[in-house]
Length: 301
Image (cartoon, rainbow, N blue to C red; front, side, top):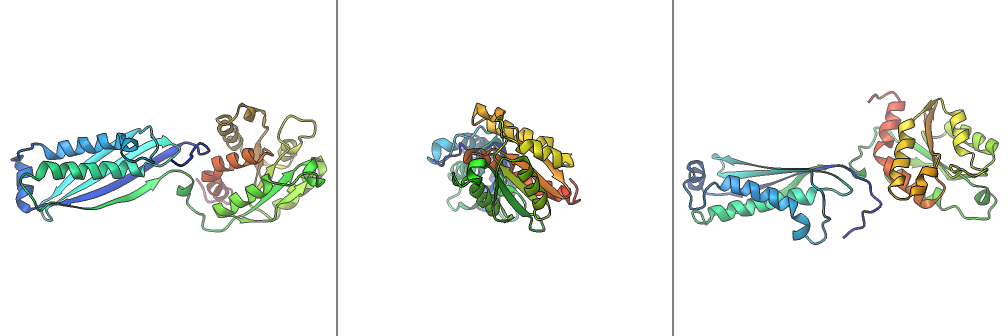
């Protein structure tokens, strides 16, 4: 199984479909329920629902997903002598539900085959496929324009060359992979004036500015205080979500003073200095970053 412990729950949906081709005579028998195995559509529908719940038992690498909703619908076309099966699955979880939807459609098709094979040996199951899925970072729609992102590392020891920067480079790679045009990582000490000057300069260059470090309770943790001074509008929900998500990983997340806000048309987000802290925070924020920047640029909600 793939490790999904670092992912966060979002609403995941998936719709799959399958077709069962049969003879015209079988279609008539279904309509009149003139079959040795009666009520084939109802039985196939229930089988598909049950199968979606058991996907992790059938397919070894699938996670045990707490499914919130399953629906299986079967429509018979007399014109094409085909049963059109559609399955829909929803779950608020860390991984997608496309396999649950595909399993539901597949088992419904197999069940229909089993119910009809006593009267029809020409049945064909075909076109089992995923129609669409939503949820998670990959579902984030890309903006019409390319946004620039800058990462500012705030650390006395890193600025003095006593420690190598890891969090800034990791954050920059993540943002680049997400679709941002990333500027070179900048490093400053925990000095208030250095932090302020660097942020004000980056506001002129980047749409998104992510800081790493200086958000704790130490005497030299000044980042959040400076960010609060220079922003014109605070984005309270961003900081709340960062801490809420971080708290799922470690209770120390409550000690972070993460802060976010807007100055001019730049979104500034202050994040922790550890690699794990900054990466987990960016993973949590990734689905909303582009939308936030679109809103700042007047594109509405």
